[in-house]
Image (tube, rainbow, N blue to C red; front, side):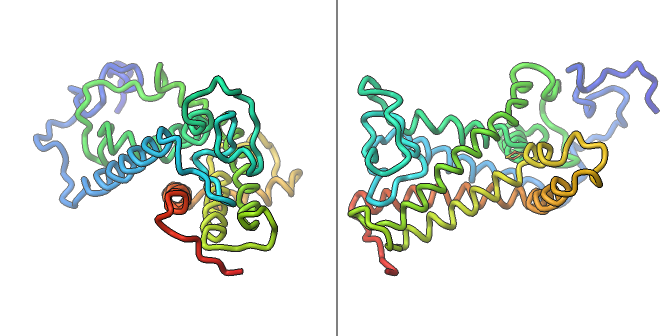
Length: 276
Ligand code: FES
């Protein structure tokens, strides 16, 4: 029973599991299953994506092959972008910008994912072991949660959500443009168009399954009965929200695959098979 004198986990005095008031259990945990597998696989998957996306973002090459532009480089905001003729591009950053155009735009999808509730859990467990798994004590002596700097900044997630919607809209436009041929005539569909279609479906379902989106749609209401449309939308978004982890991974893989496909076409390693 709480006496009111124990150090609070949220004040950073103790993680609770190292607290003197806890039962004196010798082992670090009592789990007998392979509890380390999930955080290990998560860490490996996230690390692979970080390595791949860093390489591609700094490559500043092989991100456009008509009619496809890599999602890592869209929208192109710099004069030096190879896809300036493609579609939703703006020469916001003039010729003075000499670095990769991807660096101008990746901050938004990256910020959205880094602050995502699911990814937070994933990398806290996978990389910081905080905690590594349910009922397994973390190695850290103190815990201040997300109530202090720098982790309190995770609260910007709801704002990244708005940017993510804009980026998803632009990628939708890119997907529509992928149904043109290399001469910008409509009526083309290649394997790339199909990959882009799958990717944008996953990007949208991941974005709409966001906890912030669910709150924006259904939060701050006293009576759902007086807001039937919002209630209906909230129900749909709630169904997606149940699959948020799955959609987070599926969209992460699909966006990397879409980029890699453009890379293969652009380097001449592969020809885009055409359906019509
Ligand atoms: S909670 Fe995961 S994207 Fe918002």
